[in-house]
Length: 144
Image (cartoon, rainbow, N blue to C red; front, side, top):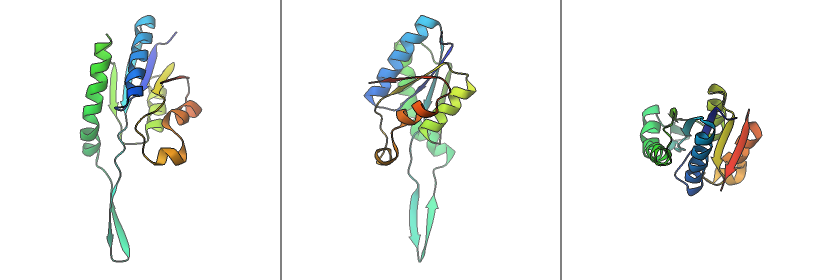
């Protein structure tokens, strides 16, 4: 039923529950598990006279910032008996990059925690899980 399962992860309790749930499903359906983490690193800004200079995170900074979270996610999935097929640390939007990975992997299911570690912007723009639910090309399971 589910050949490819994508899980959006962060360090939240709900994300760890999402990994556990995805692993149970992967065992049941002999599915491949794909993990994605999109660390949100705010740009640095500096006022210079009447202008401003904005410095955005480099790809290396994104990889370094997300490494611990991805290691924890991989460890959790292995603890549940599943070795992920794909692990990706992404520099973009968690929702959009999860959708892109689901498209790329031809996912049948996306599993995401209901509450993550989104910033203040998530209060104004809606949560990652809500965006994924609206944009997903496949079924979405939100885990609490």
